Image: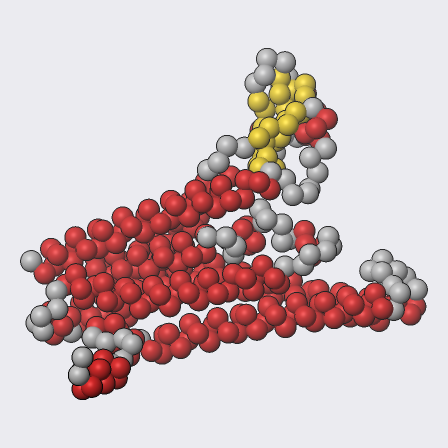
Length: 333
């Protein structure tokens, strides 16, 4: 190979052609995503370290959280303040991460796709030996890599920020808590991929920026609500009856349905007696209930549920992308 050819290859930028153009066009959105990732990670780390420092100070003073001695008041108060701040940051950061797929969907629908179709600038790319399929693939590659990477990078920070000690704070961070579950495992990345796919399809169908962004965000929101409703039933639950059902408690097991069984084995669920004027037990007894039951998911069901839900989301994303390419071919034809 000649020296000129080698120099040419070595000086070629890492990204070229359409991906490089997309990167330049939407660099501010990508910088915003980077800033969001850094800020969330920094907030989680800072509040976790603050809480751990306050806990160590309380322990060094020879006190516990329940200690009422005067010398324990200040370190106990400091720990309470740090724990409250850490909990608030974790909740708000979780909400932000759950909302990220909707933001990605709106971005893909509007600035990424619909704006070019609305303004007609896509015709310039198509007239320069760039096929519509390659044009859309390049449009998807950069935001997909950026958003999926940002989500994956944040997940270890969320896992580390959750407290290990069994405190009132950790009650809200058990594996089945909605905020915890939605910000761990494979689910956040799958949701982000779905957001990009749905946004792309919405942009191609609406072809107008604002309507496309609204449709994409609403569609992702609808998927999230539907997934939340179906979540407990995507993997077979286990059942306990009698005293074992009453003793399930509030540990690692996730109770999803409870009530009483009749003598014939028929189920009377708790919802049946929500609006009854009598007490829950009296209501159940009046309807023939003789022994309690509870359906639950043990902690071992975490990964099966994650894999099933992530698989559903990725399948929906693949379907949306396939439909998007078909719509694009019709538009070009």
